[in-house]
Image (cartoon, rainbow, N blue to C red):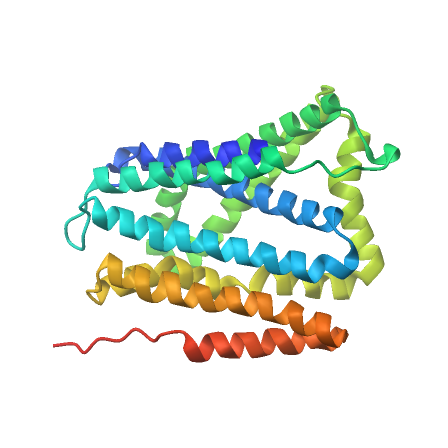
Length: 324
């Protein structure tokens, strides 16, 4: 977890050092964003694993609620906090100030120190002897994963310009630019996955990591998942997991752009969207495990989640402004 958090800090600092207005350096911003995505996802996975191993099954509801509350508080700090900071340092709608956003990003990187201190203070979960592996095996596995990630990202980094030319050429030739853009991106993604697979095979043959540990870490869980649920159910579950948050993710990315186009200031966006709505989500996250603990009914969590989502939908402020 500590390594993931340090990588998050490094990624945020790297993003702060790049001015998005400088199109020649946008690739470095993209690389830092990809590194931030990998490291933050790794931190989420490790936190989930620690939460499950650190408490008994009967306490998992409360642990999950605390996790959600912490996540939402982090959203307030990173969302509203960053907007307030950028606005306070002088950035405004129609008056972009790189120095203001750079300071906001650097302060956000510093806030990650809270997570680092927490990681250093908590106790390591004791594992059975058979579940322990040496640090060397973990380091080798991490090194192989790092090489695979480099291969995956390099395809997009060095093939981006070629892909852009193909999109333009094929779009003009066929008259279906959006279809061609999608097909070229699929081809680029397939090439990146193939490159990562080739690097992994070469790395295993070179003895960078133990093939048995790679199988136990990456392949065996996937096999067990399909064997437990069957192919059809497993594919449906994966499709659900991969698609049910698409609308939220797209909304989260584009909502601030929409609000700014509607001439709202950063402070107004921070107060209305990044604060009140998130507070209601924290309230909902704490309410359903309490209902579950009181009723001890497997369906109670589902009903509590439904009620909390309704509460969130009703009380979330709708932002509107009359247009001249």
